[in-house]
Length: 276
Picture 1: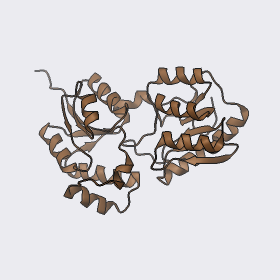
Picture 2: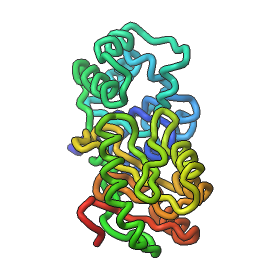
Picture 3: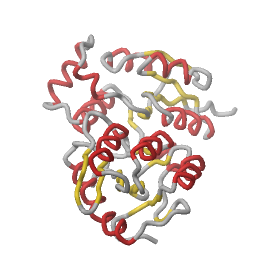
Picture 4: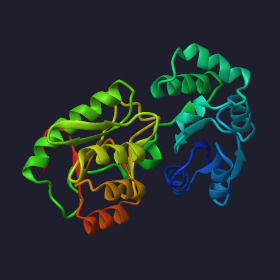
């Protein structure tokens, strides 16, 4: 008798990463039950999901019940949840209020650690994002045609250190650097707005760097760049996009490289040890 495919769960935020996760999981023979955190995400993913429901992040008990009803034992997180929601008036269920109180602060890692603990206390194992998205990880070295200039290479080592430190402190994952100075650090506004702000301050020719936490938990918040990131870079006149090799997802890589080349933007995967 043929074995039934595994049904996994996906907690889906906005952006293309959730769709990539869904497509890859289905390609590996899984059925996917999707808890869409917004109605636009539900509409976008409903064609590929085995089951789908719009369940806001402020209602974790309903999300758990949905996965239990669908026979799910393993779940993954993919997509963006706007942190600015925390400053809006939302209707949190009692479970959400309990783990927010237990978390102690609203830093991204603190919140997600509490969310994962809550899921596992309710019988769900959280998968590393790389289980279905590992093919998106950035390689090391020059990715597009454009190379870093010597001055940019000097800035690159500094930028990766600053981005890693910002990520370690759970401030953000992105910095904008020019001439050995940090012009912007990403915070609640998100990557694209941080890039725009940094480029306004630094002027044309800045370097944008995105990095993971030094002890990155690959179950959540793996850094992501894509064509939307490049739009902000192009708009701001930055000269290079530096990503941490093996620890950053590249969305729509062929398009990203093609558009970076056309814009004259150097696209480089960097380990901090040198460029191959």
